[in-house]
Figure 1 (tube, rainbow, N blue to C red):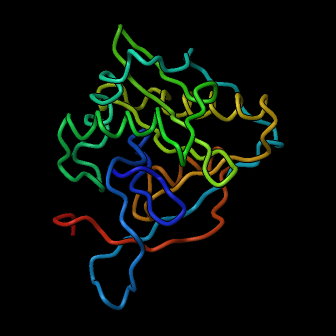
Figure 2: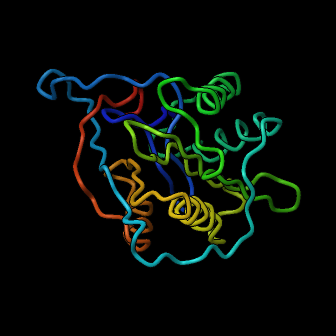
Figure 3: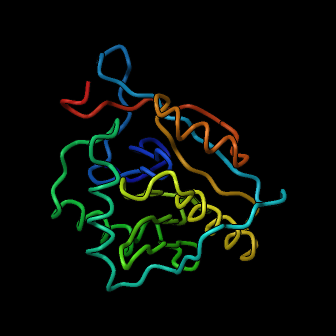
Length: 203
């Protein structure tokens, strides 16, 4: 579950499954490794008309870090980029997102959705290279197919537009067809492709 970077990011979502967690890896020459993954860089034009979220959401609170970590584990488990992370690694990732010197977290553009007192979905946004980047978008398996991931992402997009941003980007693994279909439906366009090493044991 590695977090998003300009060169490497590990995952986006399956109706909210996900983007990433720890230990981002550098790009390597594809000729030197057969275990490679392609990621699409996708961008949404915030100047275009945006749909409104169907579900209420709130900005994540510091005291929700453990709940976010458990949501990450559940959302990524069994997905294409699942690397068998532990709750300790998930907590480390959450902390690295909420407090990062090189990738400042944007709390006012990040949202979580609760269902029955459970943290069911989240969209986390950080500033990367001077522009907003969705680093994680995830939905708990119990709450998929309810439009929660879409609502969390739309909440982020609308907040970013209100803050004056003209676009937002995210990364998605090329084999994650449900996520690709969802992002395209929302208006995201593919701008480039990056190749990164696949995780050990994920071939």
